[in-house]
Image (tube, rainbow, N blue to C red; front, top):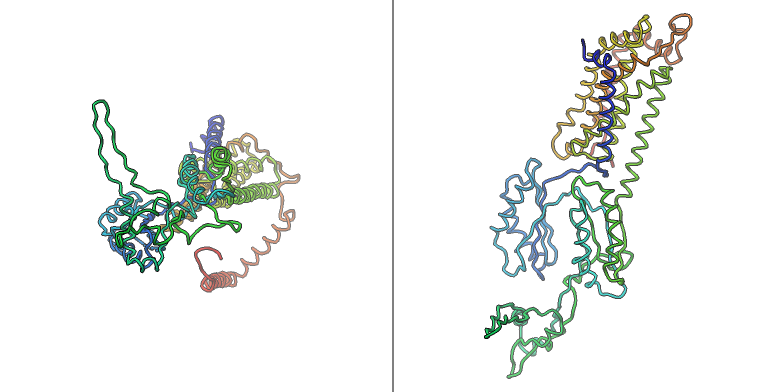
Length: 549
C-alpha cells in the first residue's frame, strides 16, 4: 500500500494532520516579526577614541594610525576604514562572514590594549558591535524655548535615552548633535604677551585646579570625620580666580588673561531640524525584532516621558520607519491575496467544476500558511522578500494539486468510482508529483547555498519558496486525493467526451500550432536554437549591477 493510499483510507487522520499544520502556521504568523527586509548580521565592530582639542591630522597620525597597525594583524579582517574629525577618531572593522562577532571583539580588545596612544587621552578607546545594515527606526527631536541646549542634552542623556533603552527589543539609543556642558577658557594673545605667560602655563593651572586627591580624615574621641575636598570646578566663575603665575609679586589669574564662559564641548557641530538646533535621539532595534511592535511600545512610552521631564522641554517625532514598513508589507500582502484570487479564478475557468476548484485551491492556504511555521522556526520575518517568495510560490503550489486531480478525473472518466479513481490515480501520479516538487526545489538550491553578502540577503527568499513548494507536494499527496475520493463530482457532457470540435479557441489554436511544429521539425529546431542564441546575446549586452537602479 502506497503512502498516498494510506491518507485516502484514513480521512480522519488526514484531516487532523491538515488542521494541525494550519494551526502551527497560524501561530507562526502571529509570532513572526515584521520588518522591511530580512535581518542580516555582519561581524562589524566600531572603535571610537577621543582626544579633545586635537586636529583631524593629529588624530589620524597619533591615534588612528597606531590603532590601525594593531588591527591589521587580526585574523579574518576583511576591511577597515577610519574617520578623523576634531578631537575624535572612529574606526570601522568588518570581518569575514565566517568569523563570529564575539571572537572578533576579543581580538579587538587585545589590540587596543597593546597600542601605545597619547597620554592626554581622557579615556582609552572604546568599541561596540554594530550591524551596518541596521538603521534606526525612530527619531525624536528634543527642543526648548527657554532652557539652554546643554540642559536639554543632560535630560536626553540621563533620563530619556535610558528610559527608551529599557523598552523591550530596543538595542541602543544614539544621541546626535550632543551639546555636553564644558567650560571654555578663551585667552587673549595680548594679555599673554604682556605677562610673558604661555598657553602651557594656563593648561597646567587648569589641571592643578581640577585634581582630586584624598584629603584624609579627622579622628576624635566620639566621632570620625572624612575630609572631602571639591577638586572639580564645575562653572566658569570658579576658574576666573585660579592663579596661573606671579609677576612682580602679584598673582596673575585666568580671568586676567581672557574670558572664561560656560559653554559646550563642540561648538562647530550640531543637528538641525526646521531651521533650529536640536538634540536628536535615534532608536535602533535589536536584530530580528518586530519593528512595528517596537515602535508601538515607544509611542506608548513617550507620554510617560513627557510627564517626567520639565514642561519647557518638548519632544517631537520626526521619523517613524514603521509607517513605510506597514505600507510596503500591506502592498505585498495585497499582491499575494490578488495572486491567490487570480489563480483560483483561472483554475475554475479551465476545470469548470466547483468541487474540483475547491479541492485544488485548498492546497494554497495549506501550503502558504504552513510555511509561516517553518519561517518562525528558522527565525525569519514577514518582510518584502519573504512575502514576495510566497507570492511567486502561489503558481507553483497549485500545480501539484492540479496534476493529481486531473489524473483522478481521468480515471473517473473511465467509469471508476471516486474512491477507486483516487486510489488508482494517486498511485500512478505519486512519483511524478515527487519528481516535480524536487525539481522545482533544486532550482532554488544554488540560491540557498550561495555565500557572501548576496547569499545572506537572498537566503530567506530561497528557503521560504522552497519550503512552500515542499509543503505543497506533501499536501498534493495527502489532502488532495483524500478530498477527491469523498467530494469530487465529475459530470460527463451529454453525448460522451468532449471532442476536438467542442474545445475552446485556445485549445484549437494550440492544436494547430502543435501540428504545424510536428510537420516542420527542422524549422522548429532552428527556431529553438535561434531563441537560445538570442537569449545569450541579450544577456551579454544587458547592463549589470548589484541592485536595480
